[in-house]
Image (cartoon, rainbow, N blue to C red; front, top):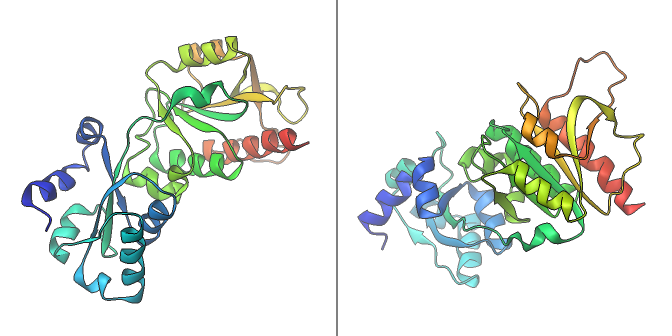
Length: 259
C-alpha cells in the first residue's frame, strides 16, 4: 500500500527544487511508463488506478513492471490525478530516480550534444529525442536550461530520456574547454557561422552546442568552442527554431560519422 507520506512526496515532485533534492521525477502516461520499464530505467514506483489495471493494456504494463522487479501499486483515481501534472491522467504514473549519469562517457569518441540556456522544456525534450535518433553519446544541459527531468521535457523526449546519458553541468564553458583540450571538436551553432554542410570537420569526437532562441550561444560558451557553424537556409524563412536546427545539424554530423 502506498503510504500518505509517499503520496505527498510524489505530489511535490512538480517542484524543481524537490526533484533536485530527492533525485526523483515523475513519468506520466502509458507510453512513457512502458518505455521506462522496457529501457531498464531506474523506476522506484509505478502507480496505477484500479480501472487501468483491469484493462488489457494495464494488466500488460503491470506484468512488465513485475518482470522488471517492481510491482505496480494501486492508488485511487483521485490521488493519481493529484500526482499527475496532465489534465487527463491516463491511469498510470511512474517515479524515476534521476541520479547523475557516469561522466566517463564524455571521454569516448562519437557525437555529443550540449545545450546552453535552452529554457523551453518542449525544445529541450525534442533535442533529447533528436540526439537519441542520431546516436549521440550523451546530452549536456548547461545553466539556464530547462530541467531535463521536468514532466514536459520528458513528454517531448518521447522516451528518449531513458536511452542515453543526460548530464547537468554547472559550468558548460569549462566542461567544453576540457573536452576540447582532450581532443574533441566543439562546434557552436550560430546564425553567422560557417556553412556546416561545407565545413571540413573531424567528426570522430565532436560536440554540437546549441543556445537559446532569444540570445543564441552565450559569449563564454562560444569562446570555448573551436568553430561557429550554421545550418544553411536557402529558402525565404529567416531562421529555424532551435529544435529544428539542432535536429538537422545532428543528422548531418551523424551522417558524416557513418561515411
